[in-house]
Length: 449
Ligand code: 5AD
Ligand code: SF4
Image 1 (tube, helix red, strand yellow):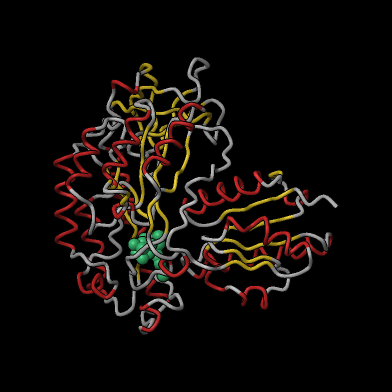
Image 2: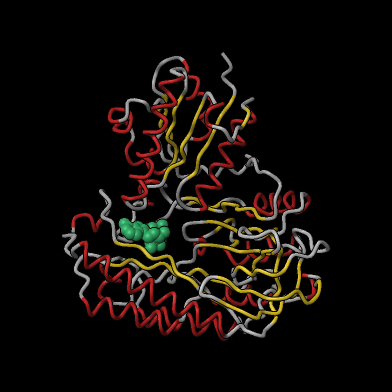
């Protein structure tokens, strides 16, 4: 029997995307081939997410599909990796008989060994969390491309009261600055053009006295033609030094993902977010002064326990004040083991939905207005390829992470940097015309100011 073909499917955040690449790197080193067809694999892995109940439900649905596959091929190994593996552990194996392998985020080094255990007919279980594992020495497996995600730290020590991440991904720990810089160098040599540095709270990064601003500066210096992005920042730890670093380096994108979660101080306190709205808005003002043209995105939770209509209106107010370029918006989902799980989940489902709809609709209007303000302006776009909807158009992104669509031209290749004049905008997309090629070394990546 060929035990050498693995298929992996990834759910949840970009951190999981980066982890799947690590897993593929580990398994390739051990002689596995990666296949994109589950039917051809002997090992199928789901890298999972536990952040909200609906994320887990989707994965249960997918496991149902694999049951059919296993019916056809009883030797198939089905593995659950990531946050759900960590959260549910043995329960997963007891509840879902088809699961042979349960491996949490800090035990991926043991995957080859645990897969062998599963091939020998036992269950492969590795769910210990580590205070030190950063997979520094492992080269993730990546297909060639333009964009790469690099995890620079793991875990989270913030313990927001609603969040399961500190329990599923463990304590915060940073990767060595040199190992991140070396990885970026290799990616630059392979032609990658955009790097996103990832961490649950990148502002807590610390390696031998180097903070996140130092890491960002060192990353930006590797290749000035490479765009550098990062996510996620916590409003409590966003330093002035970091803002000045973003402003100083033209290849660091002028874009900050700064989750606010709620506009009500009372709710923020219950969420254990450790900042007030006044502090948050002050930070936004300061960032706008230091980094002209900076844009923001955010995360918002609607229907946290005890959230009143007044609290909800405060969230809408903050959205209007900040005018986010984009937002990820969620209904509160109680997660077992978290502090807020013990609070009464007292906002009725229909009210949660209604509030979420209002938040989504307001953000749509705001995104539309923000984008209208870009009409007739020129944007620097990194070309990603053909537009998804039509081969007559090309698509790319601005430094502020907006998708730009413009007419196809055979001289414009994937990975080119071009100036596009914007002539139409919806809430989600900008449209325009090619003006000229630009050298990203000499241009600032955000011209939206
Ligand atoms: N319910 C709803 N949303 C959540 N998030 C985290 N935990 C929960 C939860 N229990 C959201 C937060 C966080 C984003 C990654 O997911 O907004 O910033
Ligand atoms: Fe979860 Fe808060 Fe940590 Fe983000 S900062 S991962 S929301 S605990």
